[in-house]
Image (cartoon, rainbow, N blue to C red; front, side, top):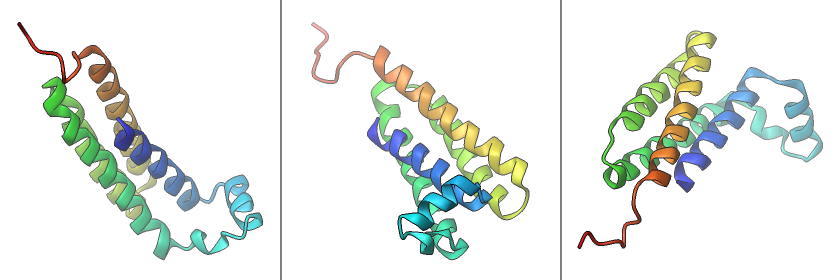
Length: 120
């Protein structure tokens, strides 16, 4: 669950920086982190966070047995990465899909029985 949340939040952060949201850019500059605003850093950072999110979805699908969140997150991650380079609405739709997959996965994980429980 930690990987999905970290990947999703990191992807949102990298996307907001890539989109150039002024308050976020100003806060980064004020904190002395203005070097992060470079696309040469943000694009790989976005890819890393998207991969972390998909990795977390892949790992948790064995626990709850549902493949849907992994497939939605994978397609969303590809759309988010390609969209940031090609067409911004595709990026936003992909990012929403990754977040929706993470939420769906967390709900399924909370409904599934604990791993240490045996079925006697």
